[in-house]
Amino acid sequence: MSDKVPGDLRYTKSHEWVRQVHGGAPNGAIEVGITDHAQSALGDLVFVEVPEVGRALSAGEACAVVESVKAASDVYSPLAGKVVAHNEALAGKPELLNEDPYGAGWLFRIEAGAAANISSLMTASAYETFLAEESK
Image (tube, rainbow, N blue to C red; front, side, top):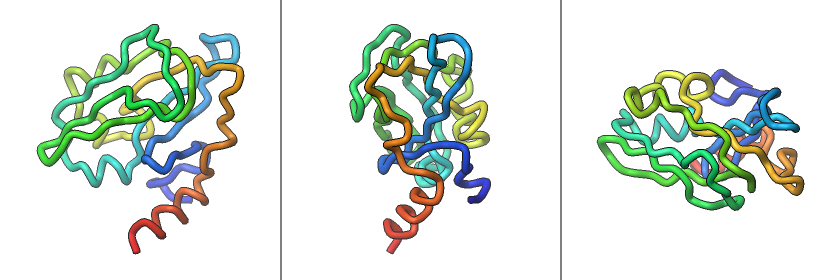
């Protein structure tokens, strides 16, 4: 694993990451962001739209938008659940996604439904393999 793909996260083929956050929701919340690969491909981010707190999301549903000087891109919810928080700092400072995609640049948190299974998402090593295949 590398700094570009932290080993403690899970990943999707659409370049989102998830992290279990303890506290808050009964089972903790799931924090969601975009990967370093995604922010690098997009370039300098100028606008971020995150889902409203209370919104119910389906796994794979487009729920956020990140916009750079090059393009706008949808962000998909990796798991089903209800949005319990969003990163308000991004409204005034979207470049946090470029500067710290796995920390201060998180997008939103969901309280995952009982059927949500983080282990169904890619491990860091599987995501690195996926990136290597995708770049061929």
